[in-house]
Amino acid sequence: MAKTSLRLQAMLWMLASGVLFILLNGLLRWLAQHMDPFVTGFLRYSAGVVVMFPFIWRAGLAAYRPHNVIGQFWRGALHTSGLLLWFWAVPHVPLAEITALSFTTPLFIMLGAMVFLGERAVAARWVAAAIGFCGVLVVVSPQLSGAGGPYNLVMLASAPLFAASFLITKALTRRDTPHVIVVWQSLMVALFSLPFALWNWEWPTPVQWALFLLAGALGTTGHICLTRAFALAEMSVVQPIRFLELVWASVFGFLVWAETPSQATFLGGAIIFASTTWIARREARA
Image 1 (spheres, rainbow, N blue to C red):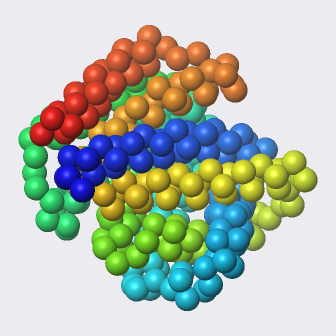
Image 2 (cartoon, rainbow, N blue to C red):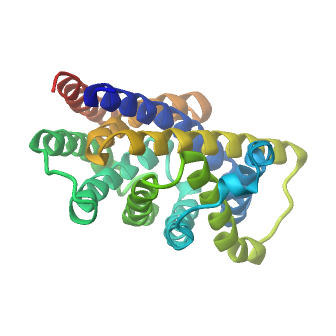
């Protein structure tokens, strides 16, 4: 299959993962506002294991044995560290700001992909990422002392930890399938986050149990889409697509919490959309 076709497929997988993750983040934000955030994090990843049980049962345990258990372990530890910060902050930060702050992660990923994975430094991709990040700054700057306050900084601190986790994911795709990687991520995160959940344990209501299962399905599907994108193309190709998530987050935040996007959000979103469209068209014509 032509390299250009693979890149377009990777971009579409990344686009799909972005929509799923926005739905997931909105759901988790609501749950974390009604339950302890660390309990919410543990149950979200435990539900991710539960929704994969039918696939594991059909394929057999041997099909989900990873080639690099140590890599899965370190990825789980890093991802859990980022999630503990993320869940601590998420009840206090509007959804659009959560998404905008998460856009620092692609920059860490693109830098790490060059340093640790040997990917080429393509100027156009960095230009697109830089323009997109400028759009993020337009969105976030007026609000760093506003609704989220210091929790914005806590959210921001999770970005390099998630970037390290995703870099390990890219390395793992060389030998393991997306389904194996996602199942082991859920297992490891559930294991590492269990002590924090037990410290403040509370039992969910029946409705909350159902929502956690929905979160597990959204998260698992989103991570499979993300891992497929990583497997099909260089990470620096697909990362600028993530900036479109701000558009979905603004719409979802308005519909659920009546969080009206500001003029800065619209302006920053336009900048982000322009950078994403440009790099996607350029890669398609490369």
